[in-house]
Image 1 (tube, rainbow, N blue to C red):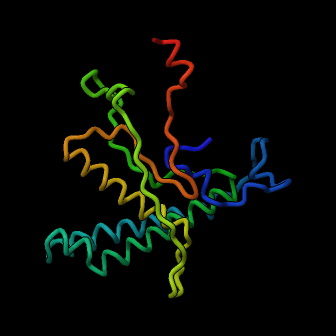
Image 2 (cartoon, rainbow, N blue to C red; image 1 turned 60 degrees about the vertical axis):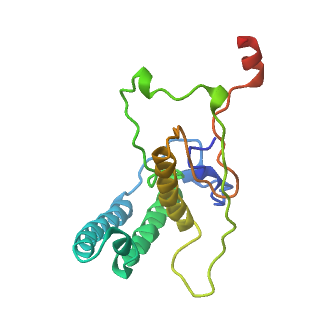
Length: 191
């Protein structure tokens, strides 16, 4: 089963044989020290990002600040640290953590906040074929998901700004994001 971001399709080797971290049994005795250290590095980078973004924004307009090399450098670092944490959680715990997704959902949705009926919903897909660049990079292809996830949030907001309701969106690797659909047999039975 995949989550909204399709992280079970990341191309990682899911055949781990007798590897206890990826097995069906509960996992005990895991030393979380390296995991916490990775989170600490990520948190430090995020704090540097905030400080840098505030400083850059005080010098430039929003668009120029988005493109400032100091900001882009830390965004690149954060993407790499997110990938590092993902890989550690996957290796040590066998989990496919979805820690980079964004959600503005309200838990207390009223009827006014309800999604439009399935009859007027449609899904749209935008695909990319991505490979490593010619220059050496310390970023894995998994970090592409971070870039697409961030861009997806911008696209979703642009659609909302244009008057549409975006009820779901996701990012995946290797296959389109599959959204929960109404079974046609159930649909016919409801008519």
